[in-house]
Every structure is written in structure tokens, then in C-alpha cells.
Amino acid sequence: MDKFYITTPLYYVNASPHIGHSYTNIAADCLSRFMRLKGKEVYFLTGTDEHGQKIFRAAQQEGLSPEEFVERVAPRFVDLWGRLSISYNDFLRTTQDRHKKTVQYVLSILYDKGDIYLAEYSGWYCTPCETFWTPTQLSSPVCPDCKRPLEELKEKNYFFHLEKYRPWLINFIKNHNGFIKPVIRRNEILKFLETPLTDLCISRPRARLEWGIPLPFDADYVTYVWFDALINYISAVGYWYDEKKFGRFWPADVHLVGKDILRQHAVYWPIMLRAIGIEPPKTVFAHGWWMLGEGKMSKSKGNIVDPLELVATYGEDAYRYFLLREIPFGQDGNFSESALISRINSDLANDLGNLYFRTLGMLEKYFSGEIPAVYPPERILEEKLKKLPEELDGAIEELNFQQILISLWELINLANKFIEDSRPWELARTKQKDRLSCFMYNLMEVLRIVTICIYPFMPNCAQRLWKQLRQGRGWGEVNFADISQWGLSPPGTKIEKGQPIFPRIM
Ligand SMILES: [Zn+2]
Image (cartoon, rainbow, N blue to C red; front, side):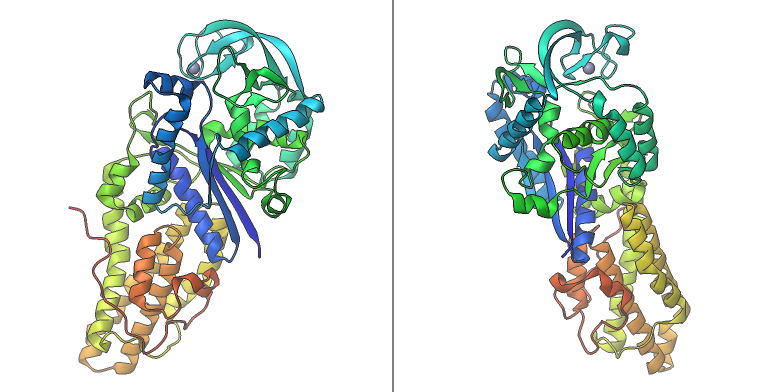
């Protein structure tokens, strides 16, 4: 059995989850469900990043210890993933023992090898961003990221050698086309690698920040939060403590990340792995941002859309569908509630909902709900049905969720046209039983195929529809390969008409 190891970033728990977090996890969930349908053993990892200055501060502001604070915030992510049917199989928190021990193990290897050194560092520090800036990176003492004033700071810290691995990384990226996706991001990283890398500061003095994983070789320091967090991708699957599990799942097949954290994942992370003698992940995919009005949604801008509210209003299936359909995965897009409503009305209520409701209604009316005998595919549908598996496979491979849905909707619209063109009411009136049976069987097969394909996007709706279709086999036995087979709808079975799945929103 093939494996598929997919990860999301660990979300920083200094704020509640927003639409951006949910976007990454919905995409990861959709891909995981496709891979499970294809018979792969999926390991889907998500979690929370719980160390560092920002969390220490946020806890202080609420009069809590950092431990108490993270205990309170982490469950908000777990709740949201429950509401969105995110089918992860591991939720890693960086405060867990398995993770802390792995971080210390990695640090010891690097220290023993001489890849970590102590040096005095002088620079400009942005407290909210927890970032040191060197004078060459600045034109004025203002943080390039958040535009807040910087403090000048001199301290001793531990550094990780990045520069000596730069030639290796450039070669690696050039020889592995699929390592950074989409290609525009790959080019950005290659461009970034044209100039020497500044070594990465991987520690914080305990005197300044206590909330972190202690360095195993110097008790006066804790680990820098980024260095700590990246290691989760190997600590979750048993690096050094569970050889069998690690051998099974590493290298990860896909790290899904937002484009703002690509450098950490496509530069620091592969170098860290190289330094400890581990293969890099197969693909790092950087997706775009959801904007609201002018800018990226962020806590500091106060322009956050609460996913829980949207789900309460429109339902999780519609929300999931909208995020993956509206913009190509990898590009930025603007969020608007009116766009969400129009997707629901046109794609879900009209195209998809009508196809199911009309088909099941006709089956009820003309055949007392009983699936007729097997008939071959009709000409109007045949060509599209033949192409569909290959089209979907190609789009899944590229994480092109929008294209999967566009291709699928071509079939849905073709089937709706097939209904119009066939004039079933005429066939019934003139008692052309044979042609009517053929018509119905074709539509039932389309519904079966469509239900399988929408499942990774809208798992709840698909499971409900599958029950109505009474396909015989349980949902758990469904395989993606079933979409390239004709004639699996069992004749003689009685379907359940049910209610319209997506009522129109006025
Ligand atoms: Zn800043």
C-alpha cells in the first residue's frame, strides 16, 4: 500500500483561527480524502505552534502563565477542524514531549557536528515580529515587516551555518522540479539563493525569554521558535524514537504552506534536514492569501473573517467548496460574502442540486424509485466520462482544486443538458419505456460518479447523497477507480428522493 504524508503548518496560537488557517486545512483535507479514495495510507498532520515571545506576551496580557494560555487557545483549533470535517490523523503541539525531545536531539547532532556556533550579535530587533534585522537589510530603524520602530540590541546567541549548504540547495532545487510549487515560487527562491545566506540565529537568551525549548548544550538559552516549529514534521512521525514509522512516512509528500512562510520551508528546512542527514520533503506547495478589501487578513489589521460564523450561516460543505473553487490554489483572492452566495446559488443549488433533485424525482415518478436495468452510456455523455478520470488525476497531481471542479462541473452541466434534450416527459407520455430506462440509468451513473468526485470537497453532502443513491456498497468500500467503470449502479435498488441539498439563498 502506497503512503501519502501531508502536513499543514503548525498554527501559532497567539490568536484565534481565521479563514487563512481554514483554507490550508481544507485543501490538505481534500487532498487527503482523494488519496484515501485512491487506496493510499494517508498520514495527515496538523497542529499548533506554542512557544515564543508572542505567546509569552499574549499570556501575560491575560494574566495567565504561558502553559495556561496555550491550554486555553489550542482547543479552538481542534474545535474548528471538527466543524469543518478536517480528517487529520495527528495533531501535534510543540509543547508535547515527543516534539521537545526531538528538537533537542536535532540540536545536539548539529552542535556536535560543528554546524552551530556561539557569536555576539548586534542588530535591530522587532519585538512583535521576534526578528533581528542586520543594518544592511534596513534603510531606517523601522521593521520592514510590520513598520514598527526597532530596538538596537547586542547579545550572544547560537547560530546555524546556512551559507555552506547554499550550493547544495540550489542544485537540489534545480534537479527536483517538483520540490517547490507553484513554479513562480520556485523561481523566487532560486533568485533569493543567488546572494549569500545569513546564518540563522537559533537561540534566545533565557534572561529575555523563558518560554521555549532549552538548548541541550547551554541552559542559559531556549530555542528560537521557527527552528523549533519546523522540526515538527519529523518529530510527529517518529524520527529517532520510532524507526519503523519514520521509515514508512518520511519523506513527506507535501508540505502545504502560505506563501509568507515559504522561505522557512524551502530554504531553512531542507538545509536543516541535509545537515542531520535526512532527505528533504518531496514537495513544498505555497498557496496564496485571502484578502479582504485592500490587504491580507491579519489580527493586527482587524479585518478577520471568522470561519465559524460563515459555517454557521452557510454550512461547512458550501464554505469548503467556495474556498477551493473561487481562486486557483497558489494565487491570491478576494473574499466576499456575495461571491460565496452566488457560488452557492449557481453552482450548488442550480447546477448540482437540480441535477440530483430532478433525476431522483424522475426516477421516483417514472420507476417508483427503482433503478432500471443497465444501459450503455449515451453519446452526449460518453466522451466526457472517458476523459474525466485522466483530467482529474492530472489536476489532483498539481493540487489544482479549481480545475478538478471545473472539469467535474462540465459533466454536471452536460447531464443537465441531457435532461433538457431528452424530453423525458415526452418519453413517458408516449410510453417509450426502453428509451426512458436508458435515460434514467445514464443519469444514475452520472450521479454515482459525481458523488464520488465531490466527496473530497464536500464530504458531508456526498455521504448523504450516497445514502440516497443506495449504491449497495458502503461508502468505505468506494474507490476512486470506480469513476472509470460503467454500470455499477445496481438495477432494482430503490433510491430515496430526499430534499434539495442546497436551497437557494435569497
Ligand atoms: Zn516587526
